[in-house]
Image (cartoon, rainbow, N blue to C red; front, side):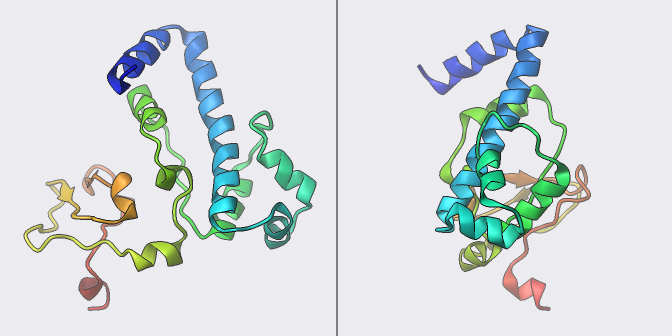
Length: 171
């Protein structure tokens, strides 16, 4: 089955409001649990090590890695983001975005690199791209980040931070 066929199949199922609610629940519960486990594994941490870093008991961390847990608070997610040194993005999105996210998972979207790992693959913009709030920014990224950064529109999402070449950051 192709990605387009899967997308159509999911989209057809989303016409049912109960399925939509279940889809959201599953994407959040399974997605977060899987991300916690994947991030921990990417950073070569045992549950006990991560629990110590977070100041919690290992059994609690184990429950967070269980897709049936589903009781994550924003405070917990923020602490996990700090412990893994990754960003945290919580947004309401159209279902089409959620479907695309579910169908286009990569190892870097499931377990994104920490800041220090990402910095090794710092993204630079092509010389011909200029920063203009009325245009999309084309990012020339031949790194692990290219899987999840395609376009950014600062005019539409003011909280989005432009990724600038190192020379412009330190100027």
